[in-house]
Image (cartoon, rainbow, N blue to C red):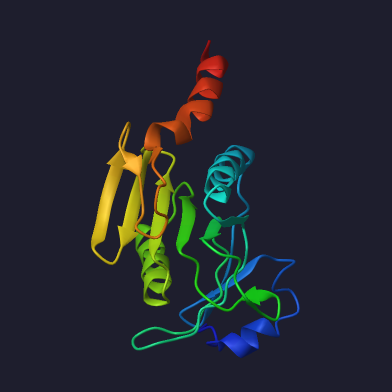
Length: 183
């Protein structure tokens, strides 16, 4: 059975949009998985670091108007960053974030994730970081393309001047907990 495509306006009228953590991509509605406690701790820690450079929000819904080759969407990124407090359109920021961070859930379809990244970048987001917990790496995307960062390599972004976070620091606490469980 084919699902009926939804416009952004129809999606925003959905009565369970927020309570069921629904997102709109390519006219389709998806339910966002909740972050597990370890992933939430990781994103919150990174958000606290980003707060030193502007305004970070964990699991903040954004609205992105459509453009050539893509449709309007309403994702809930794991983390968004704005250098200056954004002006609002109703309850949502008018402008795209400078940086979006998503944690790749286990068994997530990479094609779907790359579609999300493409929508963020096409909508004006300056950079997207996809944190891969299983591989202990970060795929960093911007207008110049994608690069995979590992270990001591630093996450930087032209969208956040002065930011340089070693990838390994993201996984330190998780690694300690894993070692404690094994010991």
